[in-house]
Amino acid sequence: MAHTAANATAETQATPLLDRLFEAGLLIRTGVDGLYGRSGTFERIVEGVDRLVTRIGRDDGAEAIRFPPGMSQSAFVRSGYLKSFPHLAGTVHSFCGCDADHAALLRCLETGEDWTANQAATEIVLTPAACYPLYPVAAERGRLPADGLLFDLQSYCFRHEPSLEPTRMQMFRMREYVRMGTPEQVIAFRQTWLERGTAMMRDFDLPLAVDPANDPFFGRAGRMLANNQRVQGLKFELNVPINSVEKPTACLSFNYHQDHFGTTWGIEQADGSVAHTACVGFGLERITLALLHRHGLDPAAWPGVVREPLEL
Image 1 (cartoon, rainbow, N blue to C red):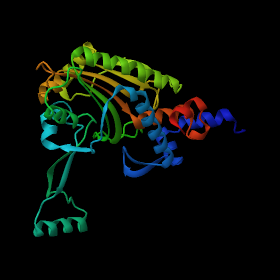
Image 2 (image 1 turned 90 degrees about the horizontal axis):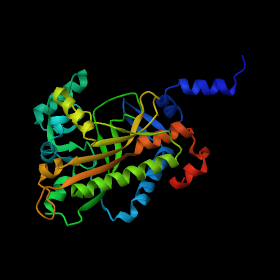
Image 3 (image 1 turned 120 degrees about the horizontal axis):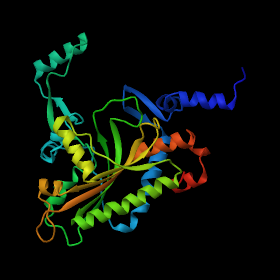
Image 4 (image 1 turned 180 degrees about the horizontal axis):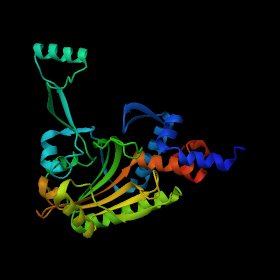
């Protein structure tokens, strides 16, 4: 039977996206699910999305801060992350033994046994979200000005959820804008970015939906927290079909934390009341994957209306 264009399209759709990304050299295997190298082409798309987000928010006067992909263990514990997401957390461990312990480690390596027994937790924890290192820094500055504060962040983040879905990477980049101030200020900020983010993604000709959402809280108590988050409309996600139509992927999130971080860190408004916070998060790899899935694995062949804002 002749190999028609329709046959080729059907074969492409039947091949998992992750395999096609590997075959095209856009992602590079490391031997660990959810941990991949990125090609220069992939990185140019990521950088284009990042620049576009910067241009959209350029006139807002946000203070840009770039933290490393690790934060202090004490701040991590104080944030309460382990109470809600222990299954996603990642810690940094190092060898802390003596000469005898080192000799035992070498024997384990020779015999193929577990060599991690003498690894101990350091004071560094992998950053779970770009905004987490920000709150203690903001708290140390004292009370907020009357018009609040706005921050521009970007960081590699870690979440321990190995998967063969390319959109669920264990280490990924998150671009965030974070607003601190009164409830009115932060809610208005979230609404503005919900409109901006939706417009940006629609301009990429991506099928999308903005839906109420909840964070992946752990355990029985977490299910109650997740339900409350949805009922109160604290979190919305912009979802795009990438891996499947039935299970779209959250590429942007719009979050109102109420006074959670203000209370946790003692962040005060100008009048001494507890500050409220909100953030908008852009999953840079996920947006890149959405573009590759929608428009093909060769960015040079993408429509001009997609390539131009990304400066490709």
